[in-house]
Image (cartoon, rainbow, N blue to C red; front, side, top):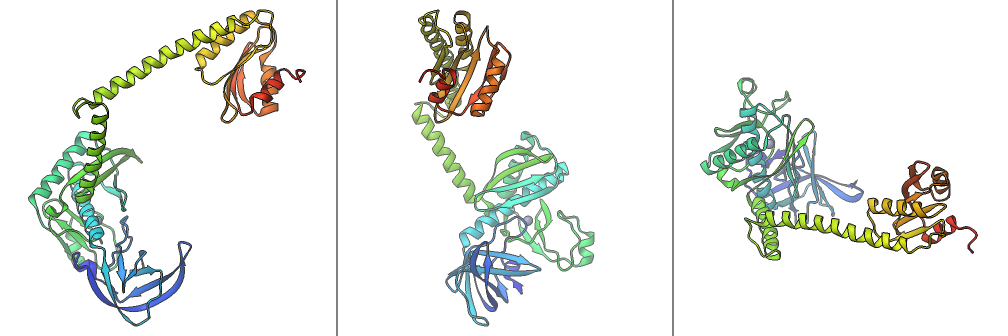
Length: 388
Ligand SMILES: [Zn+2]
């Protein structure tokens, strides 16, 4: 079968003969596997998602390659032996070409300047990433990113060739593996030589723009997320919209937005601390009102921080006999609790709470702390079983 995309990355329509069409179950769907004598559909290969498009007006839902045979999947059958007309989704294909060509230039520069290899490439409709087997600093990534954009501005040629075995042996190129059959070499003039099966743009200017979106440490190297061309434009639009929404919301400019959000975060932190103090004072006032002769004081609250809970229990234990506790939460999401006593062994209560409700808790004889998923009614009954 002839891979038309090998020879011309820009052709969008083709005629072909149907070699076979079989009903198959693929990805849990009943579909048809169509093999043609020639195709423009680039399959899922080398980490790149397949071309989209139609054959005789039928949507091609996936394209796979196995043992050099390209299979197209459709939802309706196509007659064996018939001649069909195929059209690939050019917008989608061209976007893939922009991303992939940009990746080659970036990887070529990284290989030349730092000696690292691109050991993983993923190009789907949602994400483009490349994995390198060495760590690059953010300054190095920014420098390579700039150089890729220089290569784009120079508008150099990207060419495809199938060198002979002898020529290949003498050629320095990335992704050098011993394979039978022709090796397809993609050369970005002055930047990169690499074995690759995918369609590329003819000149670097068509890539439009190259932008690194994020860098993370990955398997001893780095995973770099990148975008080219119209995808980079789309990402820029989205980011610009977010910045614009934020600057409007906070009535400030792009230059001061980070500082403003930082200040707001500090303010929220400060208010949280103040609110915690207020709550603590309220709680302490509340427990001072409980008559000293009351024992086994069990309190329930919606929301309190752990240090406040601890102070409350310490306050109770100093005055009231028996087991004193505070439970914070609600019946639906469960309760955090602290429980204390200066006469009884709290670790025994912990054992009983675990047994009764599967509570997660631990501590000392004087005080235990934990969480439990049950209702307030059941807890109240647990601590005062005779009160019915
Ligand atoms: Zn490639």
